[in-house]
Amino acid sequence: MSNLMRLPGARLVAHAAFFLATFLVLMWFMGGADPLTMSNVALAAMYATAMFGMVILVGLSGQVSLGNGALMAVGAYTFALVSMNWTTVPIIGVAMNGWWAMGFALVGGIVAGLVIGGLGARLKGPYLAGLTLGIAVGIPAIANRFPDLFGGETGLLLTVPYPEGGYAPEAEQEFEEQPVVESTDGTGTDTLPTEGEGADETLAPEDLLTVDDLGGTDAGASDAASPEALPSEGEGADETLAPEDLLTVDDLAADGSAIDASPTDVPSADVPVDVPADIPVDTLPPSTDINDPGFLIEYWQVSLALIVACLVGFVALNLVRGRQGLVWRAVRDDPVAAAVSGISPAWAKVSAFLISSVFAALAGGVFAQLLSYVGPGAFPLGLSLSLLVGVVLGGRSSLLGAVIGALIIVWLPNVVRDLSDGRGWDEQVTNNMPNLLYGLLVVLVVLVAPGGIVGSIMAGVAKMRRTRPEVEPPAAAIPPAPAEGHTRG
Image 1 (cartoon, rainbow, N blue to C red):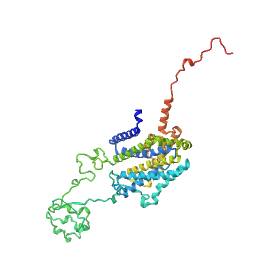
Image 2 (cartoon, rainbow, N blue to C red):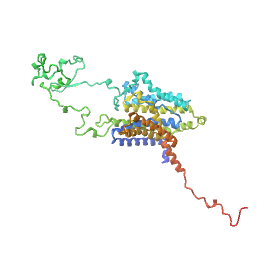
Image 3 (tube, rainbow, N blue to C red):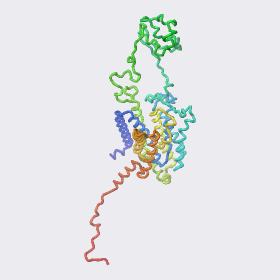
């Protein structure tokens, strides 16, 4: 097996097979999960995507960052603006959809990473932390300065992010299908005119028929439809016609009589017409295809989040175990020795910021699709602190630690919410309790397990491997006992 791993590209194939198997297994489990579990797993995958970059930036390159939540905002706003305002991809000309918009979010992350990395290349310690803290506070506040572009404090609302696209607001969507009405002569369907005579005409109130306009089974209007027949005094004089009292052409049969359409004759808008009536929609297997009757938005969202997390994890694992990972570690341990050996410490720091920013921007694009919303309130300073806390708890130098930290971030608020149910806790206490627990866990980890959960486990395993049972020394190494009667002078 070790000989096979030495072949060119063998490590890439092994890593790709690992993440593919992980994705398939998780999606198999999600097929039988409830929507709430799917949403929690999607959030954990999104956090893990951002925290993979934190592992590289904080754990491997030894830098401090309090602004990765703002970098997520860069990716989310880029995704929203591109998907809402561009119908086609520039230069290429293909139709815009969610995956293309994610590509533009990646470009936004590259630009932000190069700018921030260039500013912080010569900073370290509290100065670098201050820079990233200012970024975490300043970038989301830009939306309030340009409300026409970024939506201000209200933010930008997205429609349900279907795979084919559909990210523009519903009011701005264009429908090219012509309206179809039933033909009154019973021969088929007619389309409303879109050009020529009658194209711009609208129906006036007097063009609509009421119940009083029908005289028995005759097709023509009866004499009761005259204005004189309408009551001006007494019972019904002050009554007005509601919209449901008005009849249109669709309410008339071929002979002019009214059609008795009960509510059961109208198909439900929530159930596709091609679904058999005897199969409930909620019993169909979940699907990521919008045309499938079993389409479930939570299932599609978790599949999207897991795909992005696995792709980002594949790239991160190859960087960490490759030459670039050795460069980051060398600069972290001894920048002077790294510079003497031909490594540029400044470029190593910029590259770490660049990779971390790209991963955070992709996580922001996923976050925008999970929330169907982008606004300053979705990317507070607490988000950046949560990412840092998750990395510290799971393990700063481990990608597996990033996954564990993401699970803790998602799991802890749910535990607090379950504990508050039935105990009469104030809402503010319930909302702020996770932050208090985050702080206590960080203090506990720093004092007891500085390497985080994964680091402590690996240190324990290494200590057990170094421990060997004591072996009695050979007989030749034992000095002979002194002879009887011999005393030391």
